[in-house]
Image (cartoon, rainbow, N blue to C red; front, side, top):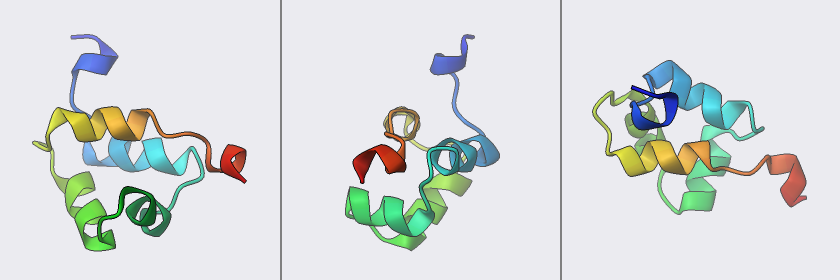
Length: 65
């Protein structure tokens, strides 16, 4: 299975947004959901695939400033 078709592990999910400069708080604000929901998403190995797609597609936060 190629990299884009497999689910991210919890550590990979967090690493995806952190490497782009995002915190859980900033991501929650951007996606208009709670920080607790970000934490639940990140921890859930069976999250819906669109969340992995969304985190993979995040811009670098520095490019938004």
